[in-house]
Picture 1 (spheres, rainbow, N blue to C red):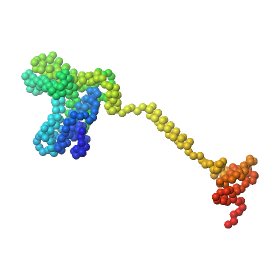
Picture 2 (cartoon, helix red, strand yellow):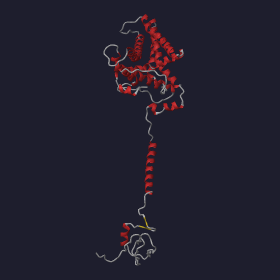
Picture 3 (tube, rainbow, N blue to C red):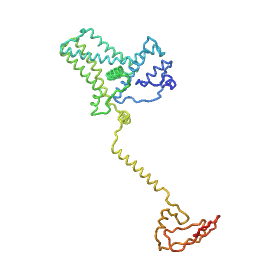
Picture 4 (cartoon, one colour):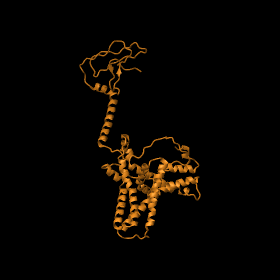
Length: 394
């Protein structure tokens, strides 16, 4: 949890660092703020569902650490002038937290040198460097063994896990070695925050998908095993034995990736997590647009528009409004047509003599020879003038 006022005070989130929370915490500490560990959980997150997701997460963490180192390495060194008011312990923790990712690129370089040595030794040649004695070759082997013992002891001491669980955790750590190497290289040569691209869909069976997700690590492991075997067969000695053991150790490191990927494929997920894993939110793909759905949607919109227009026409008022009790006002066009039409022999109804509230005249569609009565004045509040046919005097 970060206070909004503190976040605004340091200038907000960084848009150039992929681990913006860790980078923001560094600037907060440099401004005099302090962090407090709270055991209460204020939110819940979802762990990576497969090996691809775990690789993406570790890639982001490693890349963010390298980006923080590139942005603030002057502030993390114990010498020189500093803008951030960090303590010595804070500088050390952030500096070592970023530098510790470079252990994996050095592992990759050491593996490459071992593969080159095994190839040259198998061909009975020598590298253009000083030949190392067997006593010196024991040093990296001793570092590897003591490093494993130290890591398992630290995990058991801090988490209280069993020895088996610590070994399984080491296997996952080794499985992500190549991913961290890629993140370190990407962080050194590029300043943009990029994500690791991994296969989105599962093609084929689970075993094939697991191998495809770690094809590079699998190739390195196979090459290391082949190099150790050929070197021991072509040039057996104590020195080549030490080199062979080191190559097999590196093969175990990179071979942990396909093993972890296969183990992740056997994990039983709940139906909800399985549905989320196949959703575009996890895969990053947009849902495919089906032509039938588009046609059906278009027809539905057109049909709704036609129905709306028909409803408006049906509910619109008629062209003529009722006038009186029994008649309608004629249209102007019908009057003109009526005067031009010939006489009709049909009888014309006479006006009613009943007293009405207002005078009314009934227009005949065609003139007739029958006399029509002139409407009389009725009992109304105001007298109604009687129309005349003679000339009107001024």
